Amino acid sequence: MAHLKETNSEYYAGQSTLTRIGYENTKLLGSSHQEGERTFANPPGNASYILIKSWDFDTKPISAYGFKSLNQIKQSSNYTLFFQPFFEFSDFGEVLAQGFIEVPEVASFVASNLTKNERYLGLRTDRNSGSQELSRFWDSCLKSLFSAVEATGGSSQNISAFKDEAKEKFGKERYVQGNLYIQLKKGAVDTNYGDYSSICMDDIVNNFIVGYVGVGKLIQSVKRTDVMFHAKRGLQEFSYDTLKSIKSQELTIPPSLSLALPQDYVNYVKCCWIDDAGAKHIIYPTRVTSNPLEMPIQDFDGSINQDEFGDNEYSNQSITEESWAENSSTNEFSPEDYRHPRKDFLLGRRYGLQPEEAQINGKFTINERLGTFSFSSDLVDKLIILEYISDGLSDVDNQCIPKMAEQAMYMHIAHGILSSRINVPEYIINRYKRERSSALRNAKIRLSNVKIEEISQVFRNKGKWIKH
Image (tube, rainbow, N blue to C red; front, side, top):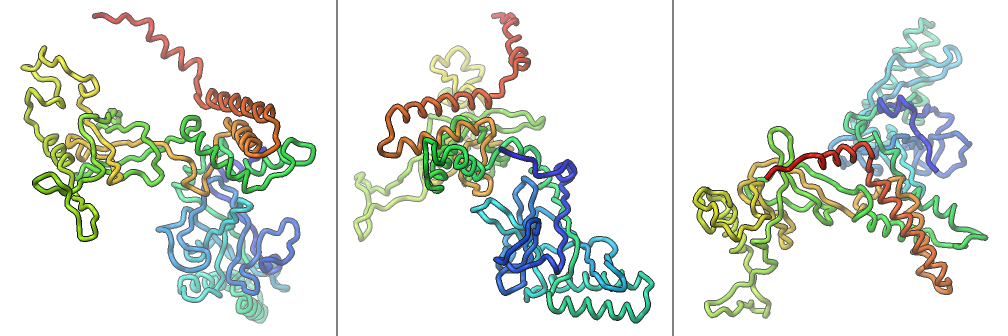
């Protein structure tokens, strides 16, 4: 159900030779195309853009400039394009410029067709006004052709005729023919590795419609939107307890002792601070304090103040949070200080010691009011790694699942569609419910990644004698 889109050189080096852009194979968007043609202009009636239906890398393309305008939308692209101009002339044949010219970021863009799950890499022609850098690029391409034809040693008359024809063609088309290749930048090359182990959501939907929907099948017809709904719901449910959907961020705790929850945060898995050797030390949540959701302002008699509209007035500061931050910053020990359980004069007296507090790695709470993690002051300026889970739907372009859970996803979609329809026999629904449960259990076993050699090494600890 999947195939390799990249050659070995493309995969390891992050390089790919793109299509050959020529005047003869560039057509307006919407016109008929022959099989194998991969280049055309956009929009209809205008040749401002050249779209290349070629992005064979698994990593997501990022362009610094948008598709419809010259406004910069990202700090930089994650790829670099190189262009080698050529021009065909009767007296010289094909004249090829010496070497490749780096394409400026403003001259390229990425457009996506979400329906077909295709990404188009494109070039802007010189018809796009407002960018001097773009004009200089195409002028340099034309000049490189002139230098190449002069190096052929032809007669001055033929060289002059070549230049005149090339200028005339450029004045009409506003771009130069050429060969194009792409080089991923370092970060994009790294993220391109290992993606073959996953299958994207669009392929899941297409495969399900091909394999489970049609005449003579249990599901004879279904809307694509219904399949997409159940697929996304399955991705959400699988992300919580089945898939390897743990995300992580490396952060430094600021003097405010607060860090904002990640944008796609659903629940935390683990929080650790990192020592100088790179080892992790688990930070545990604490139950001895909490973060209030509301702080109404009160009068001396305890009644809540209200404004002129009858609404309660609230404070922006929490006394509980301020007291916790102030007291956790002291280095003074006292018998009632549960945060520091080890002290000589306390030995044998801490009968109420809580094991969850008997550690020195710091503590944190989740402030639902502010949407932040709040840490104890002994963690200030510490480097931490926050591991959390998401629902898998935050990134539209990267909604993928491991191939080991592919069958479980098909069974989830089938059960969801059948159970929501009328006049479907209950035994059919129960059958697919069992199929879904079985496939999900198999997916969990596969994704647990238990290796007999590794677990045997762990079990050898049973041979150790523990002395008291």
